[in-house]
Length: 439
Image (cartoon, rainbow, N blue to C red; front, side, top):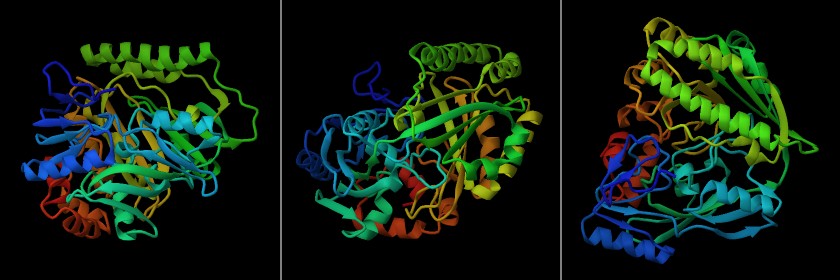
């Protein structure tokens, strides 16, 4: 999905359609040894190297005009350790495949983002996350990882082995080496009871701390131009499983969330004046629903409507102010925003460049339909996020640079020092890393 070369041979385009690049060559290694050889060869040829996953990042984090490493042959589960409760998986494995394989073994990740098309290494390297009171991002569930460094050697890191690399490489942005395998913590498969329910924005904001504290996983979507939200609470359940019926699932997740939503986006793009009316209708069309299922079926949903996205992590205590400012900005701006704003939370973690590094965080994501001008909206939103010392998702649109990150990440210097040690010649550099990490 999205990693397919389009039109001209050798052109790579991301899922959002906003990044296009032509690498000098593409390599699809079938083993770690082949990948290491490709890295050494690139260095000899004076070419930069980037690994690319499923293309779900909206930034040019994976773009290169050098050697593009495609991971589709580096997939599959290397092993499951039922004693240690871990799974070791090849870096190019899509999250979907990992989740389905774990479920067959009676196991599950603790938490997930809301889509599962990405590769495990692409998702973790950019800090992809879901929502959770205690349970954090995908990267925070990593127990060990293996990466090929700039000299072509294979480095394994964990809390015991190379702990300083482990502290940084779990969200490594592709700057420290190419991840070849990841070991995740897993747990016995469990059930989640999901309750989705419309709620006025004022009430959600007034009760936000309580809603977050009372639920293992709380998130909500606010519809701009309205005072309406749709909330989602996921909590562990003793069962029985009560999945969404196939017909209801098709109607709600495919027809409404993808089909009708897509039609509404096309209409809104063609006639921006009708957007507030569409928002009012769509935000009131949703009805409450409850279901109970295994985690990945509750956490994730198909996303067939293509969009461009910006997401910032703000300190959790700043969330209510951030959203009120965002709403006031949209209301007075004359902007026409046809996509709901998504809000999630995460506990502080101990990863150097995780967006939740050392701080309890709330995430605010703004989206625009692909092909709709998004700059004015994103620029105004970003101004609000950065005023609260927000940290942008590494794989989503933002304009921040190394100078800014040095201020909002206490361990930024630790990361860049490690990069100097592991990749002194900047073999893994590209324009994006030059901007966000500096030279």
